Image (cartoon, rainbow, N blue to C red; front, side, top):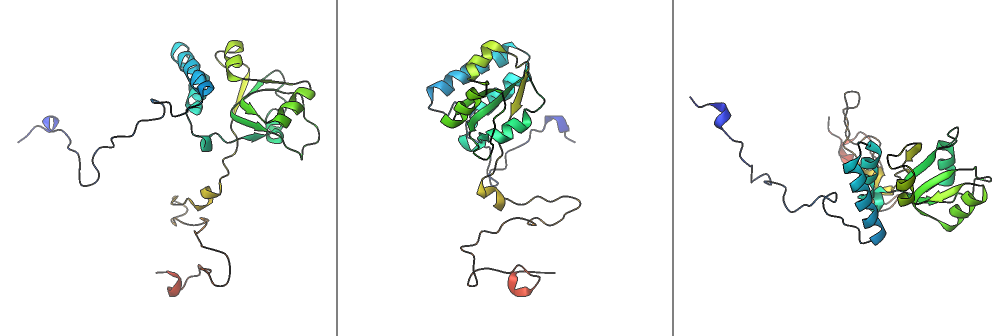
Amino acid sequence: FVKTSSITMGIDLKAGGRRVGHSSSMKAVKSQNPYNKLLIKLYKFLDRRTDSKFCGTVLKRLHMSKVNQPPMGLHRLSKYMAQKEGKTAVIVGKVTDDVRMLECPKMSVCALAFTENARKRIVASGGECITLDQLALRAPKGSNTVLLRGPKSREALAHFGHSTSVNNPHTHTGVKPYVRSKGRKFEKARGRRRSRGFKV
């Protein structure tokens, strides 16, 4: 009889073993941008020395890759900032212009970057564009701010599947297939028949 507490769990080497050689980007800064590095340094300090969840979230987002820092248009931004007078919108990403919006409301926006036209329109409407380091001086704990994120709308996301639930047992419903081209001569129907890979 062996005590179960004395047994240590082994590593299944055949199944791949331990995950080594992958440094988290939260540990090693991948960005080569000196401004970004300084912002990470600043928010790492604020996250450590304050009990603010805001600083921790901003720090996490500063570490993200460009794909995970999607830009936000002025129209979406103004929609989120409606009835939020006196608050600053914070976007860890770029703010872009939206030509479909005729009038830009007065807003205080803090972001990593602004396109030239977006900056012009925000300033012209009596608003302000500030950087994250200016925000750290003004609101170190993120008081009176609204933390926002742009939409992740890459084409690749349409192909990602494998989401099953109790209500939906199928893995690939609504998942866009990788097809070479659209047309008569290419993979077309996904009907319930043998020639299209359907099994009962």
